[in-house]
Length: 549
Image (cartoon, rainbow, N blue to C red; front, side):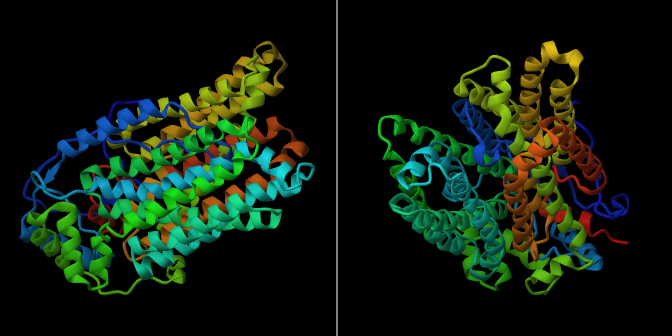
């Protein structure tokens, strides 16, 4: 892979070669290393090696904060940009880039940290049932009923599907910070019901509510972070979301350690989740609302206050001028759900949904579910060792992606990632079927699994959630992100429900071969339909997707 590549002009049914260049009177850009998103693998995932990942993350954030790029544009040029956008009919009303020039007195990181409590809860609720299922099944009298055990696991995913669709509408109506506070309600109630359940019905209701909560947070965490982050460190701050999801999974693993000595500990494991939920609600009471959302609602004084908090008082006049200038291009109301399927938006919306669909249909959950058995076939009997290998592959892939995110770009990493996953799936499939490879089948299976997870962590895992808020116009952003994440949860739920049945009917080798085919289809789709966003402000991306004819 090359160290850097030219900007890749992907398209969404448009010829980007015809778009006009943004006029500017001079640009000085310092490229920063940004953090990629850590890998979060379904409900059966383990994330390890996070200590070194967190150290790397801190270094990258510090570098991004200190080495911000500066983009100097005159007001005359800004008006020229807006004239182009207006002529194109684009939705750039509040997508103006916020680029701090020089040292700013504002603060962003603490509020990103508060939002990431939602990411921690996301990972924790996904992982907490793994260690606790055996013990809660005995307590609730379902030890011999695998169907009800499956409902304890899958109800969370069903609730998350509902929550992901609800999150977009709530964020548009009540704002980002208020939606976080509303989200804490099902998260807290779900945790309490799960921890105090005396019947399987109560446990399922608790898991359903917790699922609704993490579904909402999965939609609004990346949305909020993208809207309050300066352009030059948007990738780095967006990466923190995925890191904290992985931390949540690790916390669930650690929380389960006392189970062997105290079978009733599973109740404490579920109850602990109420603590970050309460902190999320309290923290958002002191966090600034998205300036873009406030400006859309006509709440000008509140928008100025939010800008002052995030970027410093010296930036208020400049950013408000940019938002007002941008607002002249469109006076449209918030999009309705049906607008997402209109000819105007469907091409870009379908890209978001397709990326999450490919992410799940590429087989990540299958690889994780079977990783322990695969490693045992190679003589690695320890489940901990197997999980450590998968986690190490994840951390290593994330470290590589962190240094390439802004140099190679989102699209390049996606293509490389899915191509590597296809090759890995082919190796896994052949290791089970080719007799000539029988003496090496165990080793090849382990190599294929590790390479697959490594490839996934390079792009397919972290990039979609980072890319979507960048390519969606502000008018449709919240609902479009929610729709895409809804596709993620639906496909995750269906795969979890039918995967074992398909394996029993066709065999794991054939299923892996099918996953390889899906990965190759993803490569072709991304090459022809995904636009590159590296180094572009939200406004530049918007103009690229709505070029002047």
